[in-house]
Every structure is written in C-alpha cells, then in structure tokens.
Image (cartoon, rainbow, N blue to C red; front, top):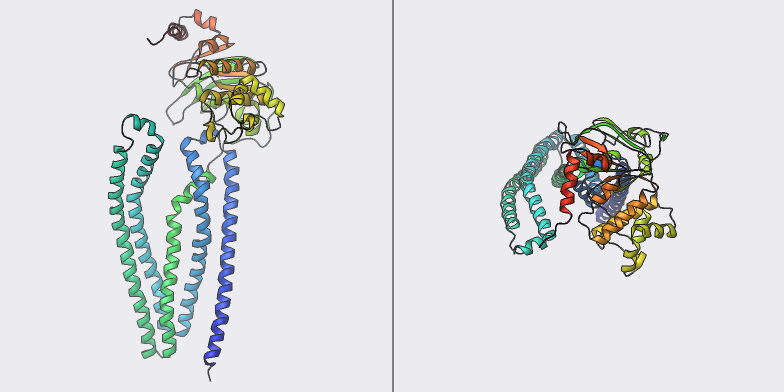
Length: 527
C-alpha cells in the first residue's frame, strides 16, 4: 500500500525545505570563506608590499597592483565562493550517484562510472580549444586597450596633429582585434559545439542503458524511469563540475600576479636595529651595480659625505646619479662594495631604521588626494599645525596656501594635479624640513622651473643643510658652487674626480669643460 498522492506531496515539500536549507547554508558558508579569503589576502599583500624593496615598484607595477586590489582579488574571491563550492559539491554528487548506481545495477554503475573520464576528456578538449582562442585574441585585446588609453591621454598631441578623430594606430588595432576575435571564436566555438553534441550523446546512452536494465537487467520500470531523470541531472552535474575546473584554469592568469606579489623576495634585513655610530654620514666604498646582469651602471664608485655637509653629484645624463641616490635609500642592493648610512651598512639596518634617517626629494614628486596640510604632515605624523606651517613657510608653500581657495584645507587632487611641478617640489621639501632627517637626498631638477619656484627651492636647500647632510643631484651652477664636495661622474658610471669647485676648476678635466660650457650658456637667449 503506497503513501498516496498527499503523502508523496508531503515528502516532496519536506525534501524541498531541507534542500533549500542545505543550499542556503552552503552558499552562506561559501560567501563567508570568500570574504575571509579576500580580507586575508588583502592583509598579506599589504604586509608584503611594506617589506618589498623600493626598486620593486615601477610604473607598470603600480597599475597592476591597483588592478589587483580593485578587480583581481574580487574575482579570486568569486572563484572561492562559486567555483570551489561548485567543485566540491558536484564532485560529491558524482561520487554518490556512481556508488548508488553500482548498488542498484552493475550495468548502471559501469555506465555512470565510464561516463566520467569520457566527459572530463571532452571538457579538457573544449578547454584547450577555448585557451587556444584566448591566446589568439588576448594580445590584440591588450593592444587595443593600450591604444584607447593612449588616445584618451594624448589628446593634446593628437589634436595638434589633426588626428584626434582618425588616429591611425587605433584604427589599425581595431581591425586587428576584429580579425583575431573572429579567428579565436572559430577555435572556442568548435570546442563548445563538439562538447555540446557529445554531451547530448552521453545523455542518450545513459538513458538507453537505464531502459535496457529494465528490459533485460532485472530492474523495475520505476527504477529505469528514475535513472532516466538521474541521467539528465548527472550530465548537468558533470557539466557544472567541469565548468568549475575550467573557471579555475581561466582565472589562473588573474591570480598569477597575486601569487607573484606574495612570493616576491624582500631584501633581507636583520631582526633587530643596528647601532648607528655616525649619524648623518654617508659612505660608498667601491660600489658596483647594474639593473641587468652583465650591464654595469655604477662601476667602482667611492665617496663620502660627512655630517651636515653638502655633496653635489654632477655628470652627463645617464651616468648613474639618480641610481646612486637610490642605492643609498636601498631601492636595490649593490652587486659589490658597500653603502653605509650613519656609519652602518644599509644591509645591516632594518627598513624602518634606514628610512628614519633619510628624506628623499626626487623629480617625480607624488602628492596624495588629500588636503595640502595632510600632504605636508606625511613628513612627520605627530607634527603640530604650527610646525607644519613653519616648515611650509621655509619651503615657500605658504604662497601656495594663500592662492588656493580653501587654503590649507584645499585638496590637491590625485598625484597633486592641482599644483604645478615646482609647487609639488616645494611641498616635498616642506615634508623633508618637517621630518628633520639627518640625511636628505635631493634631485635639484630646477632647470625647467620658473624663477619663483627655483628661488624658493634653492632657498629651501639652505634651510635643509643647516641640520642635515645633503646629497644633491646638481644641475644648476649656483647649487654646484655652494657644495662642500663635488663628485664628478663620467658617462660610464665611474668617479672621475672629487673636490671643491675651486679644486676641480683648477684641474684640466671634464668638470672644467662642463663648467665652462654651462657658464657660456648662461647668457644665451632666443631672438
């Protein structure tokens, strides 16, 4: 005697409620794991970035990090929530259906088990065809994206050349993208068509086996009907399972940069801070360095800067002046020789200890999208408003404050775009004055500034040298003359001569010829 229609309906309702509850709990657990994964990776990436050497950070790296935090981590979290959950649940479902089939009928068990490797092989084939299509289209997509960004950012140059609407490189990239997209679609589409056709064939075979077991294998018609339904669900389960695997493979490129960041090797540093024996002193001994193995940029450089003195680095463009300043900051480790700051090798100091001794005023000044006051306060977070305004006055920032509509509370925009290049340098110098670091690395770079900004920056260097050692990448004659020591570099990254302005001028070397050429050019003007 059966349960009757009402009984079966009741059982169906109970099973539906249980299924809903299980699915709800599964999804909530998946989201909890996904959010925890995103939070944990965020923290680990932040910790890792704070430990990586400054030389690791380049313009493309900054863009990739921004994309990773804004997009890639979210996609990785979605993989955890959806793909991994689908992978686990569908794998369990496949195992359960296979085992149940063996218990019901040996031929059903064999059929449902043999389908798994066939279906996996089919999806692997489809995945390879899809990857082949992506390999064809991705370079064209990246090139098109680059051209679009180029066109949007370089409108001034394009308009001046009359190509703002008909930029031929963008048009060429668009045509190539369309051609590659069509070629890639042929590969991806063929894999999907084959997978779809064979999947339908697999379902038909499973249904045929279920019917055959009812006719010749001793199972009841009711069981055969049930297994026809199970065959449809089984194919869907296998499809969802392989979709999850393919999603993980497809997102491998997305997660690869996250892995690269987390596995990047920070420069080794001691567990405890070293004892600074000579505050404010800098010494380079036989330093050799190259960005690429076998290509030397700095070759056997040795010089020293005594506390509270000013050392000017001069030489032709590309001789390694900025590289030397960044080796002092330990952007990279030297290939040979040593760099000492405060009397101790930089490799024997913690990053925090080294950075506490240095202020850096380079050409590529970056201001944060915050108020002018907070951009100066970065020099020393515990500084009072009075100390900030005092440092700003010495650096000539007060004039900028008076010009801006909201004064100190004016936002400077991302990168400081509301200010000119010279004004951004003034803010950077104010930071250095506020920090009062014993050593300041300064890329003067005043050759392209207007007289007002140039005079402010030159006056600021005089304030800095009162309490700090200045290592200046010098371009202006006035700065070079005021240096206590001048290090003349040649075009091969070697020290050619060291001395005061008078000493080097008295010798018949490159410095004398450099000085004469600059002096001759001082009075030049366009007529």
